[in-house]
Each structure stands twice: as C-alpha cells, then as structure tokens.
Image (tube, rainbow, N blue to C red):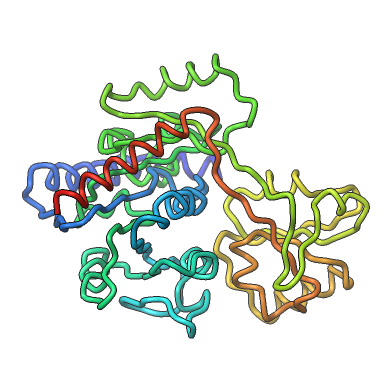
Length: 341
C-alpha cells in the first residue's frame, strides 16, 4: 500500500493543483460563497476521517443548546437516501447516516438535517416553521459554497496535517495551506497527560497565524456502557469475557480501554453497513457474551442484535487546558451574530 501511494505521487500533485485552483477562485470571489443571516459554525478537517468531528459537534451542542435553537447539518455519509431530510421519528441510521442519527437520538431539543448540498440544506432549515438560531455544519471545511462565520479545524495527535500529503499519496483533501481558513485549530485525541513541552513543540510545528487559536483535546471515555435499557460500570467488566466490536477509522484506543485477555475483538471498515452475513458472524463469535461497541456502531446494530446483549461506550471531547477560553470564543461569536441580526 505504501509503495502504491508513492507511485501515485504524480496524481497527488495534480489533485493538489486542482484543489488549489478551486480555493483560489473562491478566495477571489470568482466562485460564489453564500452567506446567511445567522451564526454558522463549520467543523471539519484537512484529512480523510478519524479526527473526532462527532464528539466536537456534540461538545458544541451541549455548549449552545441551552440558550439557542440549534440545528446540525451533515451530508449523511453512506446513507441510503438522497436530498434534504429533516430527522423525525421515522428516521434511522440508513436514512440519516450514523453520526446524524446519533445526534438525533441523543439531543431531543435540536434539529438534525442531512443534505450533500449545504446551501440547499440551510435554505430548507430556514424555511421550517421552527427556524434554527445557530447551524452547526458537520464535516464542511471544504464545502466552500457556504461561507461559515467560524471555522473549527481538527487534526489528530500523531497524525497532524503538517506531516501529511495530498491524496492519493497521503490523506489530505487539500493542501496544508487550507488551514489558514480556520478560526480555531484543535489537536484532538491527545494523551490526557500530554506535556506542556510537547504542546509547545506541536504549536511551533503548526505555525498558526496570530489571529488563530489553538487548543488540545483528548477523548474522555464514559464510566459506564449502555444498552437500550441497562447500564454497567466499566470497572465491573474487568472480569467479564466479552466481544468488542468497532467500525470506526481508528479503533485501537477503544479496544485498549476495554480489552481483557479473554476478549474477542472484531473490526469493520469505517461507517460499515452491517448485512445479514455480518450479523450472523457477530452472533457466532459472541457466543452469547455481551457485545460492546462504539456509539456510532450501536446506532446501526441495534435491532439486529438482542437488546440485552448489545452495549455501547460513549465518548466526549475534553480540553487539556483553555476550555473556558474556547467556550467564550464560541459564545461570543454566536451572541454577537444573533445580536446583529
């Protein structure tokens, strides 16, 4: 695979030129970016997957939903539907995609919508009788037809965008210079004990503009795993043999947090749609043991695995330091934008 990526380097140069021209045309106003009269926050990355967008969106929902009517807008990656859809009681992961369905299940006081065309999605949301006051764009850093008021760029610790290359040689969707559009850059999935010295080294490496803010976050795991009607302390699972299952981009930390020597681990591709063959294999390997999966995978598996057997482990994004400063940046932007409407 590494050799193949090196062979494809000329195509990476071509892809980089194409994306750079596209960004230049948007920057100069030759291609139109649409703005809207409400605060819009875009969360995204330069690389393909695995940077922690979902817990970051959930962090923003928790921060803002007490004071504002919030809507999330995603493209609905790998959903089986098309066009604009506003989540309701008939929606499931196949219609919305796993992340939007997770938002809908967890946060009952927000609107959750999907549309690959973000401009149309925003217009549809604003045409509803209950209009949102803030829209969170999920995975929209490259979607430049809409100009957000605030951009949050995520880059994973140990896989920084400054160390990566353009597709197909690397995993970048556009050149590293795209980071200049970010208001805030967050280094995600850091070790909880990341030293100040290493934070400073990363800060120098990223070399952000003075106007940009930089934060470091880590994934905080819940103390409990949950089924549809039960919860178990993680500490009580130490002596329990179980099946651990993950269909996410980088499942190693999830396994490391829960795994005991007698546990069975199963991995699937990111955003995997589980078919009948997969379900049968999972049931056979579990041998009636409890199955613990990620929250995203739980959204796609529930109903196919007995409810008493299937559990998920929630996660959330936590700041190593400066969380209150980040909160202030977000609330000041939203408060100022809504005040000026």
